[in-house]
Image (tube, rainbow, N blue to C red; front, side, top):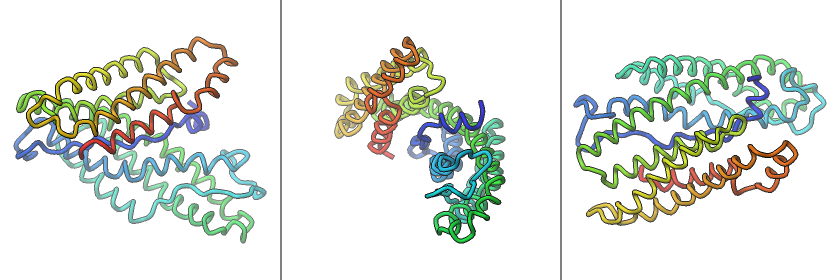
Length: 315
């Protein structure tokens, strides 16, 4: 897909809310299911959550005030916006955590390779984004007639689009490993405690996260896959509703999780209905449908519901 098309189609970047932790009373060295993998993934998730959303969210504001972002500013634009800033300290923190993640066991070849590429892309982008962000924020373009902005744009644009590619590949690899490790963690919890409150909380957030990727897709929305994700999340929500309130140490306060889970499920189902109907319509009808669905059924509405659920879930 062309870079411009990918940026235009870029949805709200997703913060990985599910961070694995060691099981009670168990160390990674003891070999508990999913623990060592969870500790390794935590090295990656911290940096990813701290920077990736901010960088990708800053792509469109930076490109949209130019006539053609591929050629850069002409010097006639008004109200330019720089890219998201990345400080030298933030880069050092990510270098430390990613280096630890790559070295940590178990080895995850696909993820570790994509992490190296992600860190390299971030390292290329950081000094350019930092300078450009300050340049536009401080209004220096008014003093030099965009001279530095023009000179910065070509290497900055190359670094931004390179980071976008690296981010997509790393995000896909990270999601796959988080799912694998979390399913191992779930198996360990169930073997130890049965289908406990901890089991349902972990399962609920895993299915919520997997659902988000497919249900918020814009360009390549797959009705069948999204429908399967909605059904899987609904199954966990409904089972938890019938089981958790009756657990000896599980029911108290479950409403704080169940309520946002129900809202998220309703928003996801509304979007599935919208996109199912959209697939049957002409381009003109789709445009009218999209205007009508300003909120309910939109990717933004689903994203907000997911973030509310993630905020309510125990950390």
